[in-house]
Picture 1: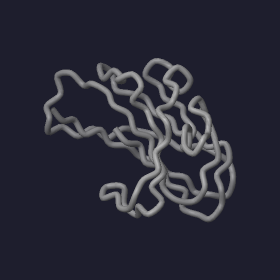
Picture 2: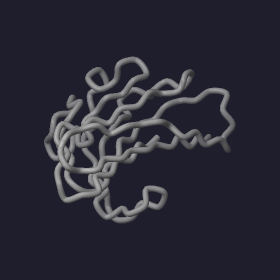
Picture 3: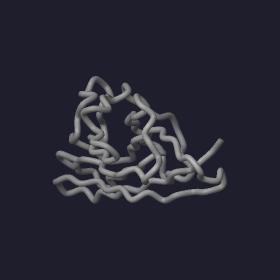
Picture 4: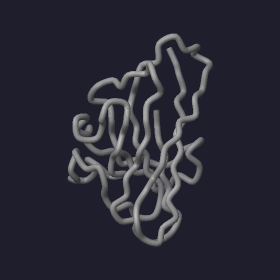
Amino acid sequence: MRIWSHNDTGATIRDASVTTSLPSGAPLIPNSTQDCLSPRTTDPARPSGPDTCGETVNDAAVWSGVNLTISPTAGIEGRSTSATSGDLTAGWSYVKFSMTAPYVDSTTTITETASLNGSGTGHPSSSGTITVSG
């Protein structure tokens, strides 16, 4: 699963948090959550350019049951792996994590509701898609 976030201005979004909840019956695979920056991407459906991914984040700090609240830059370039909010400069970032989804056909795509909240003059947006495989 990847949740894409986009700050489409030159301004920094302060205290930004990405939030979502896993669907029922789709448990998180431990130690699989990671933030990445993808500055050259213009379309999350077809990412382009190299990504900068951070360290695996602290599950206990950013997950509460099926609910995720994470800084869009947690674990990147020395930032805390426990951060639930942080500054997001202009461009694209994404949170990725893995989960299991029993009893779902491999052709199913689930659109996940996610949000990016913060303050400043940026225009945050966020979306996520779960593509089931295997």
